[in-house]
Image (cartoon, rainbow over the protein chains, first blue to last red):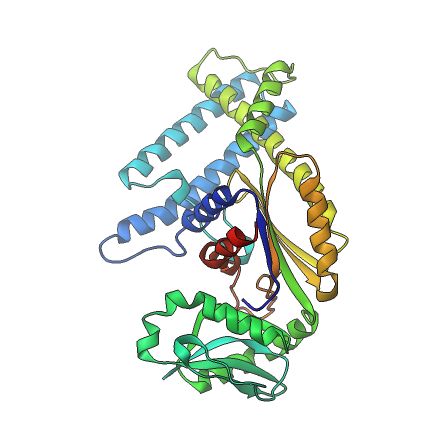
Length: 113
Length: 270
């Protein structure tokens, strides 16, 4: 290296670990080849479903926080969210997908979730 | 023979001295109007080894920076023909000119911060349990128990994010007044609080390093990885959308260089 560069850390191992996690976290594209096209598409679809599920959940929590839901509404909402989460879990298992795989890299915009 | 591109420079005159690039190929410029693309030819033999060439790519970009303003291109940018390369230069010419002017006499510094995420989360959980909350959800049914758990997670996550913002602000306060521009990625992992790039005037580098010394010596439970100066990998802004290839998507360069070469250098210097 020709520049007069400083690289300084007192925690080299910890940083290597975190950098590797960031680099490994996301495949750059949907891996769709004839052998695993089903999984590739499932990953894309489930990522979008997961995004919507999380948005719904977040909105629900905000409404609870704001005190705008009755006991009955909380019960109904809880039942819906619980079923939705269980169904997602089931689908992830069927397609062999992990939570951290359900994400998309949007380039300069960062990650979807 | 394909053409490997290293970067764009703010001059269309020839290279001052001969340089060897990837696979020992001669580095030369392909002028376009008043700028040039710096390239070397890529033999079929060298093509198979390109993954190992990241340090070579970096070396060439840094040599160019000694005499020019450089827009470093993405590692492994290859053109099939000179015509393809000229088309690219033609398409992005205005953007290149704007970026070359903006990044003239500037360098990039990297600043990564790890925080004790588990400890901080536990502290937030402890406070949550000790605090009397306005919202009370019963646990009389599985659905309500589920909501109660989710609500607790929501509040804890919100606190965690707010704490992260406060902490990032503290770090940034050391550098903000010195930097021309900055780019933050926060919480890429729970522990990696901040992955920041700062754009700095070349003549303010020492000031920036001193600010890091002050930050490092201030009492905190943060860990830092400070690096630079680097070529401006994270500050090239293109208004034209890339077609099939994002020639300047170089944001992972610092991580790759740090892992491959940087830490080895760090071992020598600490």
